[in-house]
Length: 237
Ligand SMILES: [Zn+2]
Image (cartoon, rainbow, N blue to C red; front, top):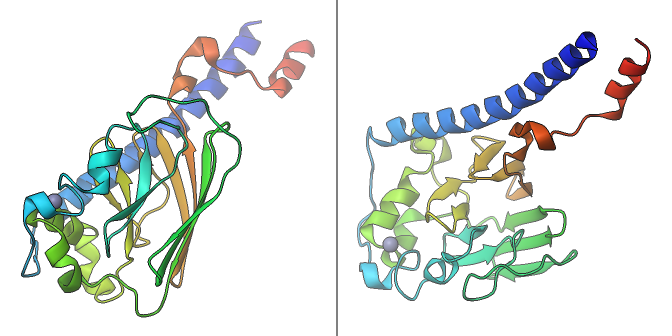
């Protein structure tokens, strides 16, 4: 019995260790990016007024979405936001019953967002792509954003700015709760945004992603699932 308990404990510690390491990697990445970002921030000229900002202004989509405990994709070229809808809410931010598989497509004619949430399972697949002339142009988008939001955008992957030059991804992930932006420039995968686990495969002007709602309930022993092969070991003792 003690051997059985030890095996369970070792496996449990192993699983929790993996989960903790992933979280720590995510935090370390964010921390290192923050320190890099503080080195220098080059802002393009001509940023707009805060009240008209397409990210934080009162008429922006984020202003509408921020009542929802969700994340989404933002097209930085025009501020259009696509909700992943893994957790479903009504317009007032009240949770609604999960639905089966659905599919949505958003485009500005040069940049394409295809989202397929399966909210009953807490998963969303997404495919992003863009035309060869549709990379992000920081000078071009500056008038749409206030100074603070342009600082956020120009700070994405600041340490890799020389490498990216004029090949910046026109999309970023956005946390509806905090308004924080997360890079999709291919520097890091996988990562967490709060309880959402994200993994992306990057290729030329295309990104395939899987996002899973993964709250840390595995850390509660009473809900930890015992795999069937552990029971087989126990019966042999
Ligand atoms: Zn703003």
